[in-house]
Structure formats: C-alpha cells, structure tokens
Length: 211
Ligand code: SAH
Image (tube, rainbow, N blue to C red; front, side):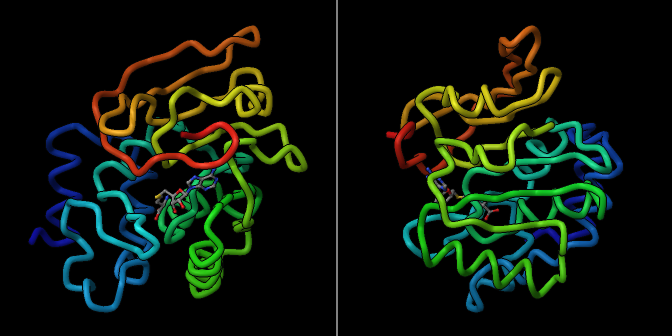
C-alpha cells in the first residue's frame, strides 16, 4: 500500500500532476473520511473503493488527473455530476476557495446523503450537494466556469454544453459501459474542442442523458 506521501512523490516525479494546487488539495483533504470504515487502511491505495449502492470512489490518480484538467482557479463556479462519497467535491471546493462555488449533483439518495455528511464534516461552506439527475445539468445555478462528470457517459450531454460558459472547461469519461476515454473539452464559439487524456473506466451515468 503506498502512503499518501509516496503517491504525491510519484505524481510529481513522473510529471503526471504539475499543478501544485492539486497536490496541496490532496495533502489537505483526508481521503480516509470518504471511504467505508472497514477499508480505511486502504484509503491511499491507488484503486477505486466501494462506497455502497454499487458505486465507487475513483482511484486517487484519476481524481487528480481530472482535477488538474479542470484548470481550476480561485473563485470558479463548478458543477459536478456524480457526488458519490463527496471526495472529488471536497478537492475542488478546497482549490476554488471561499469566493468559488461548487454544485455537486447525485442521483442516488443515500449517496447524496453520504456526500452531504462528508462535506459537512470538513466544514466546506462553498460546496453544495444536491439530489438531482445531473445528466440534465443544473440550470438554476448555470452558467459554470467548469463542469466535471465522474460517471461514464455515452456522449457529453447537450444541456451540460449549454450550461458551460464560453471559454469554460468540461472533463468527462466518454465511451461505452466498459471503457471510456477521458475528454477535456474547451467551449470555443459555442462548440466543444476536445482533447483526449487517455483510457479510464467508470461506473455508468444514469438519468435522462445517461445509459
Ligand atoms: N465523484 C465521486 C465518485 C463518483 S462514482 C467521489 O468522489 O466519490 C459516480 C457517481 O455518479 C455515483 O455515485 C452515481 O450514483 C452517480 N450518478 C450516476 N448517474 C448520475 C446522474 N445522472 N446524476 C447525478 N449523479 C449520477
């Protein structure tokens, strides 16, 4: 099992994570709070762990790659689709600071409750967890500087493209249910210009624009 420090050293020395804000957030947020009691010793294992309801908290390296791809800045307004444990939400909330705002949507009631509890424990006032079908986005708070989908999607849902600001970034695993490529999209002249960040595997997106 790697230690928290070993993971950070690996990301920095391999060049996988260059954004210091991402490393600082990883250092600060206690991942052990977000995994099940009986898997706490494995909190820094670099693999996904079950969080109930057949869902998983993504492996640390994946969370950091997605976070870095978002090009987060203090004061950003961010939408997350798929709160799960709330870990990714906590990392984003830490980076965007008090002037920023994170809205995180979760379709499964029990997981929305779990994420809410975890966010509350860390006293993150700039993060809000909402039980909602995030495949439709969340129009009430739109537009967003950044959007992240942490479940596999057949394609980037159109409402999310609409709710992204011009110049904004969306990060999402796109593909079939068994494998996806991580897409980093920038909205330029209303269209998404895509960059491929490699292959990943996520649980499927549900809801109106999911599978
Ligand atoms: N980001 C999470 C892990 C996400 S796992 C973490 O840090 O722990 C993917 C999550 O997306 C699951 O919790 C699943 O219930 C949720 N999900 C799937 N479809 C969704 C939808 N349409 N809207 C919101 N959440 C959804």
